[in-house]
Image 1 (tube, rainbow, N blue to C red):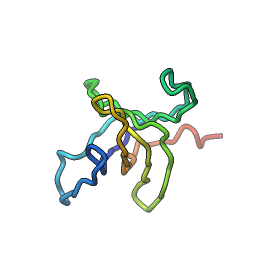
Image 2 (image 1 turned 120 degrees about the vertical axis):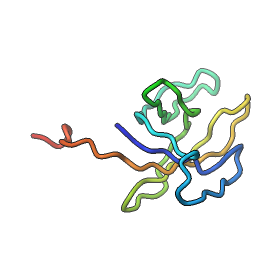
Image 3 (image 1 turned 30 degrees about the vertical axis):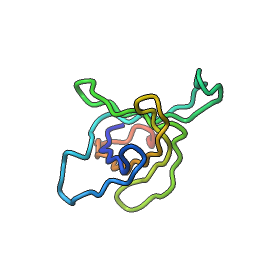
Length: 105
C-alpha cells in the first residue's frame, strides 16, 4: 500500500519536525507482517517501507498502532541501528489509489 512515512525519532531521541520540510519523510510501499526473528527467537510484527528505486528506511519491529487520526496513523516500535535497538515511532499517511480492491464484493 502506498504511504508517506515520517520517522519521529532519530537514535531513540525525538526529532523536531518543521512544517513543510520534505527531507524527513519517505514515500513508498508499506508492508506489515509477522515472522520469527532469528536473533531474539520470538515472533515480531515488522513494518517495512520501500520506495520505487529500492531505497528503504530500517524496518520497524514490534510495530503497534498507538493512535489513529483523520489524516494518518502513529505506530511505535524499535529499529536496529548500528547494532543497537532504538525506540522509534512512525507517522503514516496513506496515498489515495482509486478503487479499493479489498472492499469490493
